[in-house]
Image (cartoon, rainbow, N blue to C red):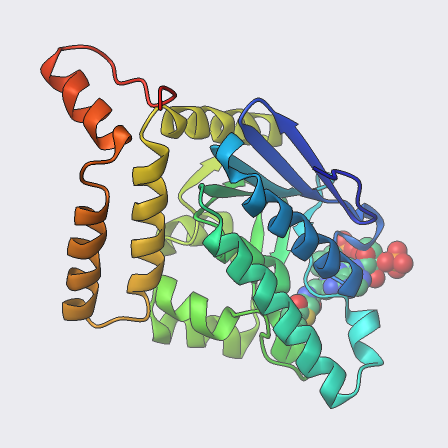
Length: 264
Ligand code: HXC
Protein backbone atom coordinates (compact mmCIF):
# COMPACT_ATOMS: atom_id res chain seq x y z
CA UNK A 1 0.00 0.00 0.00
CA UNK A 2 1.33 3.44 -0.95
CA UNK A 3 1.79 5.60 2.15
CA UNK A 4 3.53 8.54 0.40
CA UNK A 5 1.37 11.54 -0.35
CA UNK A 6 2.10 15.23 -0.93
CA UNK A 7 -0.27 16.74 1.63
CA UNK A 8 -1.23 13.94 4.01
CA UNK A 9 0.61 11.29 5.98
CA UNK A 10 -0.57 7.76 6.61
CA UNK A 11 0.94 5.70 9.40
CA UNK A 12 -0.07 2.14 10.04
CA UNK A 13 0.79 0.52 13.33
CA UNK A 14 -0.52 -3.02 13.71
CA UNK A 15 -4.18 -2.92 12.75
CA UNK A 16 -4.71 0.83 13.39
CA UNK A 17 -4.09 3.58 10.81
CA UNK A 18 -3.44 7.25 11.58
CA UNK A 19 -4.22 9.68 8.77
CA UNK A 20 -2.95 13.24 9.22
CA UNK A 21 -3.52 16.32 7.06
CA UNK A 22 -0.09 17.90 6.87
CA UNK A 23 -0.28 21.51 5.68
CA UNK A 24 0.57 23.02 9.01
CA UNK A 25 1.61 26.43 7.59
CA UNK A 26 -1.91 26.91 6.16
CA UNK A 27 -3.53 25.41 9.27
CA UNK A 28 -4.17 22.23 7.25
CA UNK A 29 -6.59 24.01 4.91
CA UNK A 30 -8.17 21.67 2.37
CA UNK A 31 -7.13 22.43 -1.19
CA UNK A 32 -7.72 20.26 -4.25
CA UNK A 33 -4.46 18.39 -3.69
CA UNK A 34 -5.43 17.43 -0.12
CA UNK A 35 -8.76 16.09 -1.35
CA UNK A 36 -7.08 14.23 -4.22
CA UNK A 37 -4.59 12.67 -1.78
CA UNK A 38 -7.35 11.81 0.71
CA UNK A 39 -9.48 10.23 -2.02
CA UNK A 40 -6.60 8.05 -3.24
CA UNK A 41 -5.60 7.10 0.30
CA UNK A 42 -9.16 6.26 1.42
CA UNK A 43 -9.66 4.04 -1.67
CA UNK A 44 -6.48 2.16 -0.78
CA UNK A 45 -7.54 1.78 2.84
CA UNK A 46 -10.85 0.38 1.65
CA UNK A 47 -9.05 -2.16 -0.56
CA UNK A 48 -6.77 -3.22 2.33
CA UNK A 49 -9.46 -3.13 5.01
CA UNK A 50 -9.05 -6.80 5.97
CA UNK A 51 -5.86 -5.91 7.87
CA UNK A 52 -7.23 -2.82 9.65
CA UNK A 53 -9.59 -2.38 12.59
CA UNK A 54 -9.74 1.39 12.99
CA UNK A 55 -8.35 4.78 12.08
CA UNK A 56 -7.56 8.13 13.67
CA UNK A 57 -8.03 11.19 11.45
CA UNK A 58 -6.23 14.33 12.63
CA UNK A 59 -4.36 17.49 11.61
CA UNK A 60 -0.64 18.26 11.92
CA UNK A 61 0.47 20.61 14.69
CA UNK A 62 -1.22 21.94 17.80
CA UNK A 63 -3.08 24.91 16.34
CA UNK A 64 -5.54 23.42 13.91
CA UNK A 65 -7.27 20.21 12.96
CA UNK A 66 -8.34 21.79 9.64
CA UNK A 67 -9.13 25.53 9.32
CA UNK A 68 -11.49 24.92 6.41
CA UNK A 69 -11.28 24.72 2.66
CA UNK A 70 -8.40 26.70 1.18
CA UNK A 71 -9.82 30.21 0.81
CA UNK A 72 -6.98 31.40 -1.44
CA UNK A 73 -7.58 28.57 -3.91
CA UNK A 74 -11.37 29.01 -3.78
CA UNK A 75 -11.15 32.75 -4.44
CA UNK A 76 -10.00 32.05 -8.05
CA UNK A 77 -12.60 29.38 -8.85
CA UNK A 78 -15.38 29.65 -11.44
CA UNK A 79 -18.87 28.40 -10.57
CA UNK A 80 -18.15 25.09 -12.35
CA UNK A 81 -14.84 24.69 -10.50
CA UNK A 82 -16.64 25.51 -7.23
CA UNK A 83 -19.17 22.78 -8.00
CA UNK A 84 -16.42 20.27 -8.79
CA UNK A 85 -14.56 21.21 -5.59
CA UNK A 86 -17.70 20.75 -3.50
CA UNK A 87 -18.41 17.35 -5.10
CA UNK A 88 -14.77 16.24 -4.61
CA UNK A 89 -14.91 17.12 -0.89
CA UNK A 90 -18.28 15.41 -0.55
CA UNK A 91 -16.87 12.27 -2.20
CA UNK A 92 -14.06 12.26 0.37
CA UNK A 93 -16.59 12.64 3.19
CA UNK A 94 -18.58 9.66 1.89
CA UNK A 95 -15.39 7.56 1.60
CA UNK A 96 -14.77 8.21 5.32
CA UNK A 97 -18.33 7.13 6.11
CA UNK A 98 -18.11 3.99 4.00
CA UNK A 99 -14.81 2.67 5.37
CA UNK A 100 -15.57 -0.77 6.84
CA UNK A 101 -13.93 0.10 10.18
CA UNK A 102 -14.45 2.97 12.63
CA UNK A 103 -12.75 6.33 12.21
CA UNK A 104 -12.28 8.73 15.15
CA UNK A 105 -11.68 12.39 14.28
CA UNK A 106 -9.14 13.78 16.78
CA UNK A 107 -9.62 17.54 16.75
CA UNK A 108 -6.78 19.74 17.98
CA UNK A 109 -7.53 23.48 17.65
CA UNK A 110 -9.57 24.92 14.78
CA UNK A 111 -12.11 22.74 13.00
CA UNK A 112 -13.79 25.38 10.88
CA UNK A 113 -15.85 25.10 7.69
CA UNK A 114 -14.56 22.11 5.76
CA UNK A 115 -12.67 21.02 8.89
CA UNK A 116 -15.87 20.70 10.90
CA UNK A 117 -17.47 18.97 7.90
CA UNK A 118 -14.69 16.37 7.56
CA UNK A 119 -14.75 15.68 11.32
CA UNK A 120 -18.51 15.08 11.10
CA UNK A 121 -18.06 12.45 8.39
CA UNK A 122 -15.99 10.36 10.82
CA UNK A 123 -17.77 7.96 13.22
CA UNK A 124 -17.29 10.24 16.21
CA UNK A 125 -15.18 13.15 17.40
CA UNK A 126 -12.68 13.44 20.25
CA UNK A 127 -11.28 16.95 20.84
CA UNK A 128 -8.89 18.89 23.04
CA UNK A 129 -9.80 21.83 25.27
CA UNK A 130 -8.40 24.18 22.62
CA UNK A 131 -10.75 22.92 19.92
CA UNK A 132 -12.94 25.47 18.15
CA UNK A 133 -15.73 24.39 15.80
CA UNK A 134 -17.82 26.42 13.39
CA UNK A 135 -19.20 26.85 9.88
CA UNK A 136 -18.05 30.40 9.04
CA UNK A 137 -18.69 30.12 5.26
CA UNK A 138 -21.38 32.85 5.18
CA UNK A 139 -18.74 35.33 6.34
CA UNK A 140 -16.96 34.61 3.04
CA UNK A 141 -20.13 34.87 0.96
CA UNK A 142 -20.30 31.07 0.73
CA UNK A 143 -22.28 28.21 2.24
CA UNK A 144 -20.88 24.94 3.62
CA UNK A 145 -20.05 22.70 0.65
CA UNK A 146 -18.61 19.46 2.01
CA UNK A 147 -21.83 18.28 3.64
CA UNK A 148 -22.21 20.79 6.50
CA UNK A 149 -25.78 21.86 5.68
CA UNK A 150 -26.79 18.21 5.84
CA UNK A 151 -24.65 16.51 8.47
CA UNK A 152 -24.65 19.28 11.10
CA UNK A 153 -28.46 19.40 10.98
CA UNK A 154 -28.73 15.63 11.30
CA UNK A 155 -26.22 15.53 14.13
CA UNK A 156 -27.42 18.35 16.39
CA UNK A 157 -30.88 19.25 15.00
CA UNK A 158 -31.84 21.56 12.13
CA UNK A 159 -32.56 24.73 14.07
CA UNK A 160 -29.39 24.61 16.19
CA UNK A 161 -27.46 23.99 12.96
CA UNK A 162 -29.16 26.97 11.31
CA UNK A 163 -28.16 29.26 14.18
CA UNK A 164 -24.52 28.13 13.90
CA UNK A 165 -24.41 28.33 10.08
CA UNK A 166 -26.27 31.69 9.79
CA UNK A 167 -24.13 33.41 12.44
CA UNK A 168 -20.87 31.73 11.38
CA UNK A 169 -19.86 31.96 15.04
CA UNK A 170 -17.26 29.87 16.82
CA UNK A 171 -18.49 26.93 18.90
CA UNK A 172 -16.35 26.28 21.96
CA UNK A 173 -15.33 22.80 23.05
CA UNK A 174 -17.77 22.84 25.98
CA UNK A 175 -20.68 23.82 23.75
CA UNK A 176 -19.61 21.20 21.19
CA UNK A 177 -19.75 18.55 23.93
CA UNK A 178 -23.17 19.81 25.10
CA UNK A 179 -24.46 19.68 21.52
CA UNK A 180 -23.27 16.09 21.12
CA UNK A 181 -20.93 17.13 18.31
CA UNK A 182 -17.93 16.03 20.38
CA UNK A 183 -18.08 12.77 22.30
CA UNK A 184 -15.18 13.41 24.73
CA UNK A 185 -12.82 16.27 25.53
CA UNK A 186 -9.19 15.97 26.63
CA UNK A 187 -6.67 18.27 28.29
CA UNK A 188 -3.91 17.59 25.77
CA UNK A 189 -3.40 16.26 22.27
CA UNK A 190 -1.30 13.35 23.59
CA UNK A 191 -4.06 12.32 26.00
CA UNK A 192 -6.60 12.51 23.19
CA UNK A 193 -4.55 10.38 20.80
CA UNK A 194 -3.79 7.81 23.51
CA UNK A 195 -7.50 7.61 24.39
CA UNK A 196 -8.47 7.23 20.72
CA UNK A 197 -5.99 4.36 20.33
CA UNK A 198 -7.36 2.75 23.48
CA UNK A 199 -10.94 3.05 22.22
CA UNK A 200 -10.01 1.58 18.82
CA UNK A 201 -8.16 -1.23 20.63
CA UNK A 202 -11.28 -1.96 22.68
CA UNK A 203 -13.45 -1.92 19.55
CA UNK A 204 -11.03 -4.20 17.68
CA UNK A 205 -11.57 -6.98 20.23
CA UNK A 206 -15.21 -7.15 19.08
CA UNK A 207 -16.40 -8.76 15.86
CA UNK A 208 -15.08 -6.65 12.93
CA UNK A 209 -17.95 -7.86 10.76
CA UNK A 210 -20.51 -6.77 13.36
CA UNK A 211 -18.83 -3.36 13.81
CA UNK A 212 -18.95 -2.77 10.06
CA UNK A 213 -22.59 -3.86 9.84
CA UNK A 214 -23.56 -1.58 12.75
CA UNK A 215 -21.67 1.33 11.14
CA UNK A 216 -23.29 0.93 7.72
CA UNK A 217 -26.81 0.44 9.11
CA UNK A 218 -26.49 3.47 11.43
CA UNK A 219 -25.09 5.67 8.64
CA UNK A 220 -27.76 4.60 6.18
CA UNK A 221 -30.49 5.21 8.78
CA UNK A 222 -29.93 8.95 8.23
CA UNK A 223 -31.70 8.72 4.89
CA UNK A 224 -34.49 6.34 5.87
CA UNK A 225 -37.85 6.44 7.60
CA UNK A 226 -38.03 4.52 10.90
CA UNK A 227 -39.92 1.67 9.17
CA UNK A 228 -37.29 1.44 6.41
CA UNK A 229 -34.48 1.61 8.96
CA UNK A 230 -35.98 -1.17 11.05
CA UNK A 231 -36.36 -3.34 7.95
CA UNK A 232 -32.70 -2.70 7.02
CA UNK A 233 -31.63 -3.53 10.58
CA UNK A 234 -33.50 -6.86 10.51
CA UNK A 235 -32.02 -7.75 7.11
CA UNK A 236 -28.45 -6.98 8.14
CA UNK A 237 -29.03 -8.67 11.52
CA UNK A 238 -29.98 -11.84 9.67
CA UNK A 239 -27.06 -11.47 7.19
CA UNK A 240 -24.51 -12.04 9.93
CA UNK A 241 -26.22 -15.20 11.19
CA UNK A 242 -24.17 -18.25 10.35
CA UNK A 243 -20.94 -16.30 9.87
CA UNK A 244 -17.80 -17.61 11.57
CA UNK A 245 -17.67 -14.46 13.72
CA UNK A 246 -21.23 -14.89 14.96
CA UNK A 247 -20.51 -18.58 15.73
CA UNK A 248 -17.30 -17.64 17.58
CA UNK A 249 -18.99 -14.87 19.62
CA UNK A 250 -21.96 -16.95 20.74
CA UNK A 251 -19.86 -20.13 21.33
CA UNK A 252 -17.36 -18.18 23.44
CA UNK A 253 -20.19 -16.92 25.65
CA UNK A 254 -21.55 -20.43 26.20
CA UNK A 255 -18.07 -21.87 26.79
CA UNK A 256 -17.36 -19.05 29.31
CA UNK A 257 -14.28 -17.81 27.44
CA UNK A 258 -13.30 -14.63 25.60
CA UNK A 259 -14.19 -14.60 21.92
CA UNK A 260 -11.27 -14.59 19.49
CA UNK A 261 -12.41 -13.01 16.25
CA UNK A 262 -8.97 -13.28 14.66
CA UNK A 263 -9.65 -17.00 14.15
CA UNK A 264 -11.52 -17.29 10.85
C1 HXC B 1 -6.26 29.19 3.39
C2 HXC B 1 -5.65 29.59 5.54
C3 HXC B 1 -6.92 29.17 6.00
C4 HXC B 1 -7.86 28.74 5.03
C5 HXC B 1 -5.75 29.74 7.70
N1 HXC B 1 -4.97 29.93 6.64
N2 HXC B 1 -6.96 29.29 7.34
N3 HXC B 1 -5.33 29.60 4.25
N4 HXC B 1 -7.48 28.78 3.75
N5 HXC B 1 -9.07 28.27 5.36
C6 HXC B 1 -3.59 30.44 6.62
C7 HXC B 1 -3.54 31.93 6.88
O1 HXC B 1 -3.80 32.65 5.70
C8 HXC B 1 -2.11 32.10 7.36
O2 HXC B 1 -1.24 32.07 6.23
C9 HXC B 1 -1.87 30.82 8.16
O3 HXC B 1 -2.84 29.88 7.68
C10 HXC B 1 -2.07 31.03 9.65
O4 HXC B 1 -3.35 31.58 9.86
P1 HXC B 1 -3.61 32.97 10.63
O5 HXC B 1 -4.89 33.53 10.12
O6 HXC B 1 -2.42 33.84 10.57
O7 HXC B 1 -3.79 32.45 12.12
P2 HXC B 1 -4.69 33.10 13.27
O8 HXC B 1 -4.56 34.58 13.26
O9 HXC B 1 -4.34 32.37 14.53
O10 HXC B 1 -6.19 32.73 12.87
C11 HXC B 1 -6.59 31.39 12.81
C12 HXC B 1 -8.01 31.30 12.11
C13 HXC B 1 -7.93 32.06 10.78
C14 HXC B 1 -9.04 31.96 13.05
C15 HXC B 1 -8.33 29.85 11.95
O11 HXC B 1 -6.80 31.56 10.04
C16 HXC B 1 -9.15 31.91 9.94
O12 HXC B 1 -10.18 32.55 10.18
N6 HXC B 1 -9.08 31.06 8.90
C17 HXC B 1 -10.18 30.86 7.99
C18 HXC B 1 -11.26 30.02 8.63
C19 HXC B 1 -12.44 29.83 7.71
O13 HXC B 1 -13.11 30.81 7.30
N7 HXC B 1 -12.72 28.56 7.31
C20 HXC B 1 -13.79 28.24 6.42
C21 HXC B 1 -13.31 28.25 4.98
S1 HXC B 1 -14.62 28.01 3.86
P3 HXC B 1 -0.06 33.14 6.07
O14 HXC B 1 0.52 32.81 4.72
O15 HXC B 1 -0.68 34.49 6.17
O16 HXC B 1 0.89 32.83 7.23
C22 HXC B 1 -14.88 26.36 3.81
C23 HXC B 1 -15.85 25.91 2.78
C24 HXC B 1 -15.94 24.39 2.70
O17 HXC B 1 -14.32 25.62 4.56
C25 HXC B 1 -16.74 23.98 1.46
C26 HXC B 1 -16.07 24.21 0.15
C27 HXC B 1 -16.79 23.61 -1.02
